[in-house]
Image (cartoon, rainbow, N blue to C red; front, top):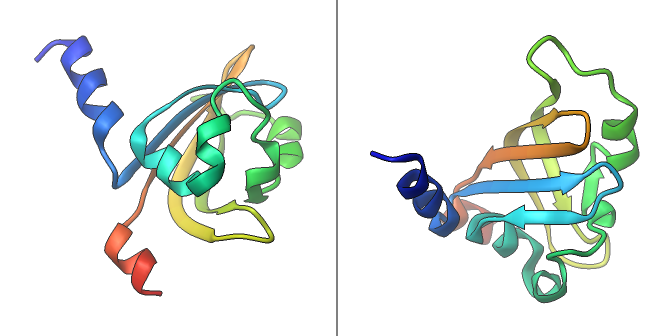
Length: 115
């Protein structure tokens, strides 16, 4: 399986959230699962500031964190959403390179919607 095919498959997954953001919180790339977490705001999210969606940990805390030897700045329960809208919690990891953050998280859509 080529990397391109894998990337295309990840783009359409709804139970996996994948996103890439620059250091200021501008969303550079995201798959369908991440965009679904953002709900109605997703239509304007790509290329926009998504720092407000990071409830726990806050994006400022991620930006201030020192990466471990693998570049990871966070692992655990992520809470994303808008304080006045839907809030979703999921298990995930966030890595940081010199110029961007990468997020990978998993969630059970049916369970989230039931709760």
